[in-house]
Image (tube, rainbow, N blue to C red):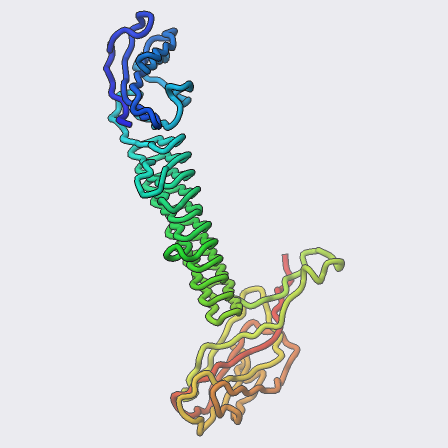
Length: 403
């Protein structure tokens, strides 16, 4: 469609001799070519006249003294105006043509520089709707609403809403995101589903969330799924193998068919639910909290803090050998406790079982019935250099009672 050009005040008499302003342009009708459309803005009471022989419409709309008017419906019915419609909402006061094009059968383009062309091979653009600025739809039954959205030729029934969304296969993109595989859903700035069109069914929700594999689900800021059938939920959560699950802030699941949960599971406080459903409301789990890798050749204490309003009751502490670069000829002497009393749960004790990669040594606790808000592990006498251990604490965490 070429849009409308204003004829200016006094553009000539309209039907019945009404003084009028004429706006005229071309509307492209599927299989019929271009139809000349003339809109006449005149004084109140000017009639609507259709001249079928010339395929022209004269439309009189009452308006204010400044010639303003409002258009609330599409351009009529009947055989002369069936099919594709491209509407120039900016033209009613003589604005420049909007260059929107709607060539697919029964398609609608509303706004500036929207394009429903079906120009790519095999595409029709039929039954599509583009609303906004610089949207492009190449596939049938597509919808693009916003600014610079693209529904590609392979994206039959694709939906793009927002700014700079790209739908390459059947799917929905909202925000500023990309759906690169069949039946994907991407919501959020930079969200992405699928890679190369091979994967399908992914869901990505959040800023830069990526569900790249088959049936992946990524929810959260920078959440990421790499292979297939995996789930990542939480900011920076990452599931990197088939059937892997990552739950929580910065959780990472690298092995297949495994789940990583960050932040320890705890039993919540009583909020007056009663005893009848205690198993549902007050369940918990035995949790394991580990330190990062610690070199055995440095004397130091390492303190972990339990989250506010929670406490842990310890049942076991120990070590595993996480990196063995050389035989552990000299094993370290270690202690366990809390911030205030570093040897509260284990007095300095020489390790004897840390002889191979993955070896574990557990210790009997001096106390088992006191709650803690901090945990401590220390090396008091060094072991062989270049080797590393990870200390662990196992127990139950319960939320403090309170308002």
